[in-house]
Image (cartoon, rainbow, N blue to C red; front, side, top):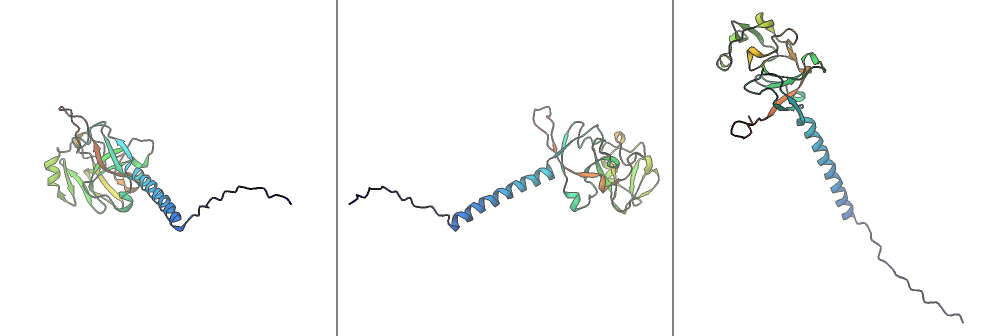
Length: 197
């Protein structure tokens, strides 16, 4: 009679993938995709930086200062009076970005008389208090009626600004706007701290 060989066999317990493990894996994958999508959205909306060129926005923003731009807001809502916007004049992508303040919105009538800003026939007293009289009215010496999607913008340093008064810029349409300047990165002041306004 033949002898049976002793075969040693080791049985390993097979690991089974339970529904709980599958749910946990999918939960991690979903969370990772969500975080990546959120990060992409934040970078797209708020990640654009633009340098202010010139002194036309002093004292609000100074030459060489960096502003962060919200590129999403004007795809949802239109600019309001007082907003500081970033735009390319006439949509010219070869131009540098302009940073200016919206002073009139669609439907408004704009005119500059004796260095004072008039909106819808009324002198802007706040404008008069905060800014110097404008030496040059430019194209706003005659009344300008803003159509749908048109905005009139001025620099805060009115006598050192190329803005909607200039014929080569004129009124700014919403399609020219890159977005709203929402945060300025500060410069060091004399005490060594950063000014964030």
